Length: 339
Image (cartoon, rainbow, N blue to C red; front, side, top):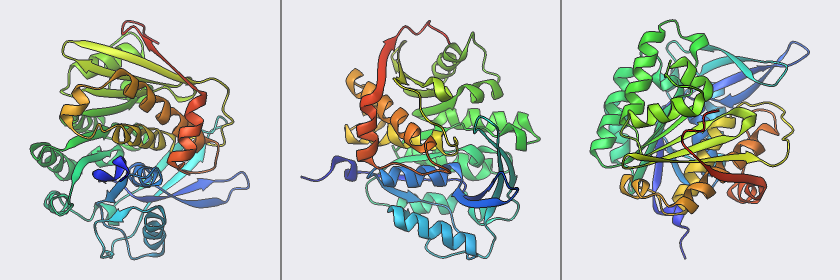
């Protein structure tokens, strides 16, 4: 019997870069990264047929990125390397293992594309059912690239996933950044935000859950994932005028090495579980079954936990995340219960 996750393809559009991660001795370790690149890898590692849409550089780092995609089973939609250099992010880690970024993204390979090229790439993918973007793709300067692409995918009937994943420390024009993110979230069927994203977007509310619920109700989306770092995550699902909420958390403390890629692995685990359960269209998402929602949330949290136990973004397999999900406690909570 064919694996149900292989019946549909997911396409990811957004940044691919090299994380130069600071080490205690003052040197830097070059790790492949970029939120959307990480998401594409993490989806493929969980058995999902995944395309990465953006071009990659012909330079050494670009060759590293392409080799990583191929090793993880991601299809590169742009087979021809480009002359532009690879994006860089210098990453310092706090004492708690949280990353602090400085980006170098002018005239770089992953931005050497346009909306029509992304639209054409999606049109060429047979059985493409879902598209994903977010993070730096929504930063000022790229709205003419990604927003028209998202609009075209929505008209084509595909399920749209947007991860806010804001980087306010490296963007000067926060007003435009917020506008871009909110516009993309307004188009999506599945939203992912963190409590830090909600604060950066200035979403009103008493606590993160209240803010998340207000944001979900202001959009056409059916489902929102809200991540809270080591405090677990929520999944909110809209059923007409009503919202149901589930919370998931590890039952035991997780040994954190660093948190690079944790949110990307969480989202990949969530989407992989939804695909596994046959939720691959906007219509299926609107009728999301409670058991499927809880299993998907647990799988997402487990995927993130396995990532943070290792240095850099190291996505887990479907089997590893499924085994870990047994240690994740999920419960339905009242929407009014803010954090």
